[in-house]
Length: 182
Image (cartoon, rainbow, N blue to C red; front, side, top):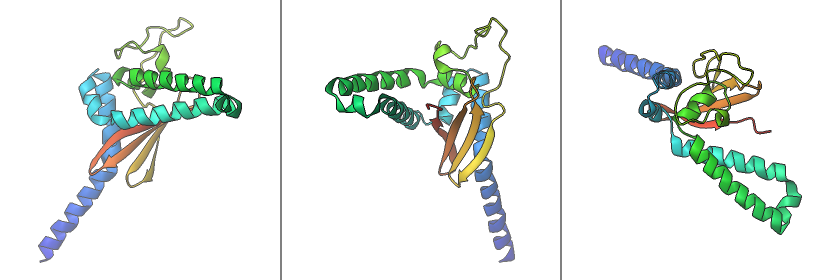
């Protein structure tokens, strides 16, 4: 009986350690996939439908807040917001791919680097060589709950970009990216 209880306790401790290490293992797998330019391996670590819907909601919300109540109340303003929402949704669908995620995780602007590949620019806007930086370099990690984990980096303008991993069973996947849209 004591052996069974000891084995059960050891199993529970190992399971807890695996779940606690899960986000770090997922981030490591994301880094490896980006560095190996393996889109299928990256796709296994990212919940693309959830990520796309979250980013679309953020962009539409930012657009509506920026337009203000006057634009929302006028017929022409409402029409323009409707068109802007369609453009934002199309842009998210085009940018939320392995290449776009790789650029964002390195703190680069996605729209500058949307080439459809993982390739980094040879030089920056000033003509200086770009240093190789691994995805999510210098990230600050934080557990928000037992099923939510964040990694925060600074973009190329020093604003925080938060990557949110969520647990589904024992697997952690990137499910949200909080962009600095202020």
